Length: 273
Image 1 (tube, rainbow, N blue to C red):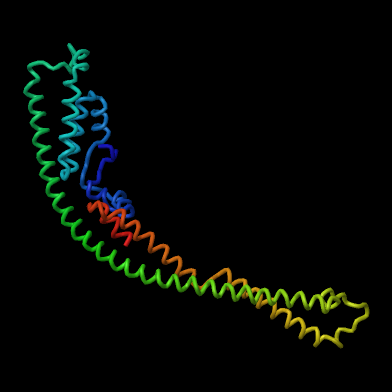
Image 2: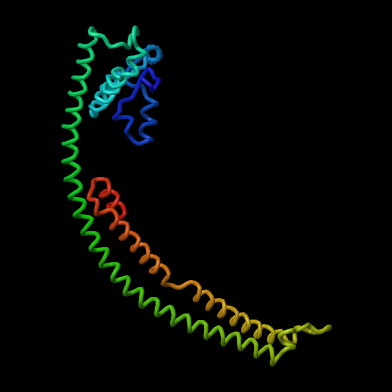
């Protein structure tokens, strides 16, 4: 009714992926209704009777969920039999009188019937979920054992990596210190060269080869220093260390989910794995 369409889609169609649903909504449907008449009649009906309409139409629309009808019928009886409501309902259509007993009794029977259907359905779903959960829990345990082995292996590798990094870092720092010391020595020994000012009238062609060779050496030293800075700041082992940290996170998440041994958490655990 609240699709507000002359043709309406089924619950199964509504449950399809968004792209498929958009295509379906653009096509004529076999289900027909005059929604303007239906909705106008509905809003002109009193609130309690609207509950019965919701129960009947909701149950027919979603035949896989009998609790819909049971719930709306229960809400109807709970409200109409409320003592406070009955005090102010005297003389109105909401007053409970003997002539209404058979209809109210029938509604109560409907609640019992559909509640029983719901309980039977829940037992079936519970068994399916339990079987599914058992199978996936076993799978998760097996995956965890494999992950623990991998984590142990990576943990040992991590110790070696850290030792190597510390050793390499010391070497890089030592080489950088040597380069800095060499630069200072050159600056002290050849201050005029380090603070070179081009003489007026200099014929560059005479010393151009010497200038080129010195520039080449200086560029080489600069590149070496930059490369060592890069090596120190960007270790080739960073990716391995990141993987170790991520795997540890996954295992800790698994440890939180698995003890519950439930249908929903097994699905989450499986996705995390």
